[in-house]
View 1: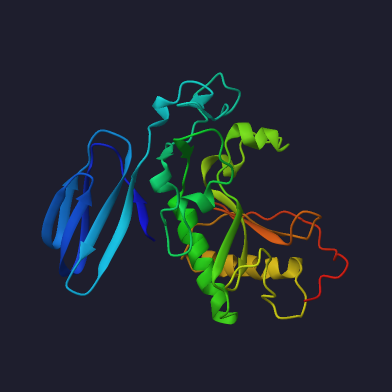
View 2: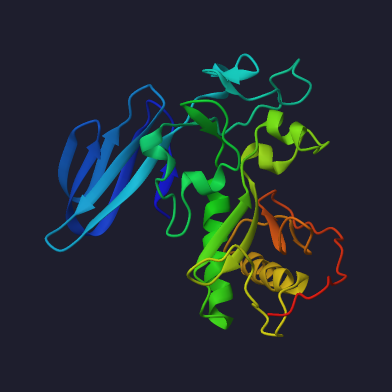
Length: 272
């Protein structure tokens, strides 16, 4: 994980087994030691926390989102958001708040294999862009990749076909539910590839076919991690080929195990 969220105006404490030099930009804060405590301004922002010693440098993004109370219309700074719920109540707004992204933030990594841009599935208008991000989902995707790579060492890339969706975009693509976990940054539709990525699921189960059962291999990996208590529990289901893309898997962090039936029938010529 290369990012974590924090509330505006709160104190943050970070620790390291060894003494390092700490800094937070653009706040200009600096200190040395095994522990570092700093206060965040009462403002939304993405700050950069750096820890360094004589041999290495490590950075994290400290995400301070906008409070849901700051969302009052169907847009945020001209970014087309749409309405949560029926638009007449604030009850369904994301509790995590909205991350504000500028061009310099867009490709920041939130984990080893994922960036903000990977998880914001559709951008509209100019800057800033906005998204909701459940960091438990990011951690879950990374752990799933690690689990898959135990049996398929070539796995290197998490391709996110659809992550956070605004209610406006969700409605535009014909999704009738107003409470999709995609709207809350808690769901992603992914596939796993080797490097270099070619835009298609790898033959993870090594049966010489690229099909829905490679997605099932990912689902099984997620269930193993959930059962061990290593990741947030949620929904997971594999999807078959369609005319516009290959197989993929939906993974979320809803808090309870969920699965739904998807088509398992094969398509013509899915052989590698």
